[in-house]
Length: 411
Image (cartoon, rainbow, N blue to C red; front, side, top):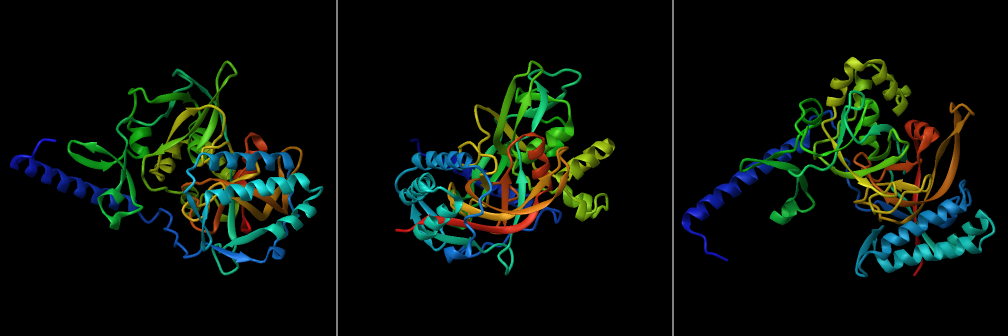
């Protein structure tokens, strides 16, 4: 390695100074305006042990086949991890070997049991049950839903399919500030270079309306509907149905690092959709009825998602396929990835035409296999509903309180 001359050192010092000034600007921009959701406080212990008898574990409402599939997918995730990997599980730090044994024991009990009641009795005997502290003194968790959308599209641009969906740009930088000092541990930024400065990455406005990435070869597919494109980014994955009937599956690849601006809140604050009527379907309906307002509404959310073409899936944040009804997304900084859980909430009751007639309580074993930008804190869970029209309707209307439990096999 060559020795630095004085002028090299001066240049280096200036570069470092410019870099940290740029990071200061990036940090300020990451804080965002008041319209962005207020940061969620982090509890010391997001999980508390509860008596297994206090949970109605016999209430599962879905098929065993889907449950086995979801458990096996989490086992695939654990098999890929080093043996010394630890998971925060309530007050304990649990090795990956015990996480695997939890799922293997559960699969064995599931195979031996002739009913959900029999399984529940065995689980209560062999497992420790932890409950999320939730978002209030009642330990309630707010449940929402997500799904895999399907959109008509094309691999080439034409007069109809003119809206691009982008892959990750080459100039997008992911900066781990923890490398620059312990005081920045856990802080990550996304930006780009402009000369010798690091600046925030392009906003949604810059990309969608100013064409900052246009014509640079990052286009994966082209679609016609701006509303469906927007919701594809909200969901984080989806399928593009091509003219020849084939499908291209897109998965989440990266974000632009800008703060999330919930357009549902904007529409409520403006009095355009009543709070009690707010849903994904209500937002979609309003946008399609008022196309002249789309640009302003979309610009309220400066965040932007980039995709990649994927085989199989859809995949969650642990890189295994999601199982409809059995996969959930939680805050990955608080809850153990891939873990076995049990939820209590409400589900829609449908008429044959897809209209929701009402809501019914249910319980269900699920696997913690995903996360999301809006899923923060111990009081949030996102339930994956799969694809198709019923999945879209259910995901769009679910916004109900419930309870979240995690299960860990006894030593």
